[in-house]
Amino acid sequence: MEQKTGIFLVTSGEHPTLPLSEAKAILDAYKVDYRVGETHYKLVELEAPASAADLVAKRAGYVEEAGIEIFHSLPEPAEIKKTMRSLDLTRYISPQESFSIRVARYGGISKEVSRVKLEAELGGVMLSQIAARVDLENPIRRFRGMLAGPYFHFGLQTFKRPRGSVARRRPRKRPAFHPSTMVPKLARCLVNLACATEETVFLDPFCGVGGILLEASLLGCPVLGVDALRRMVRGARRNLVHFGTLPFGMILADARRIPITKVGAIATDPPYGTGASTLKATTKEILRDFLPEAREILETNARAVVVSPLGTGASALAEDSGFKVLEDHRVYVHRSLTREILVLAKR
Image 1 (cartoon, rainbow, N blue to C red):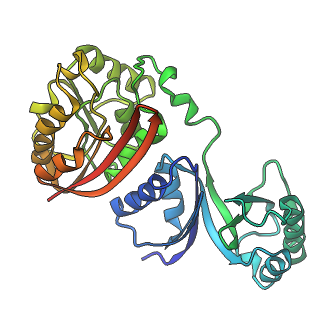
Image 2: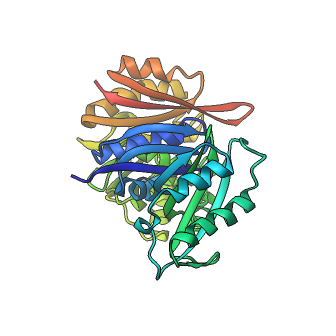
């Protein structure tokens, strides 16, 4: 069994509760033993096997970088340097390797500490221990200092999201576009909240043009998409193929009568309002009919993640359908729409 250590995650800071919940769901899905430590704005600390840092960061929608925590101290330059000098830094870098040290501030603390000056001073401490080479452009080892909460945190970065990797999947970059399509980070987060892995048959029963399906497919899940409109089913398939993936199946059907017997995870964003896309039913009516179907086809101990406009009464409808509400998140979209995201477990 891999020994636990301190790891850090740096999130995008776009939502107060979703990033941590997403990280925990990924670790739960892969049965990783972990404990949540400090959380300060963008910074999340965990006690977990070192490999968990990259596992979470590579799969999560809201994690920008991750790494191994080396130490934390009071956010005072003298104390930081004293702590760093007491450590054996040769565990993290060899003389043949180059390095950089970058310091970030999360949450507006310790503004009297100059990040640039601290970077230079910590680089000096590193060089006094080991004759490595400084390279600020393309180093082999990237060390991260983080001023967050009441501490200074120092670690070795093991993953950073490639620049532009999310932007290339924006809805308007896809062959088939629909204005209600969810942005990639949130769509991926929903897949992870459903505890989907590469072994999980994943279903979006209101798939539209496939925004959620695309993220699940890129994570390696065999995906099933259902929609009541033929143009949506065709659009979803086009989008998946465009990004180099193929659906396990695409089905033209009403999600209130799902023609599927068993799936391992569900995440979906049903249509809002009335009209052709909702078959002239309200969102509340759709959820009332759909949720019992979803519970019936979910495997034991599996999760469903359902999005709806706040005020629809989705939580009560889910409980009436035999689900247990594990989490309830709110995402503000604009003045007339706040999304409610429910994470449900089959009771």
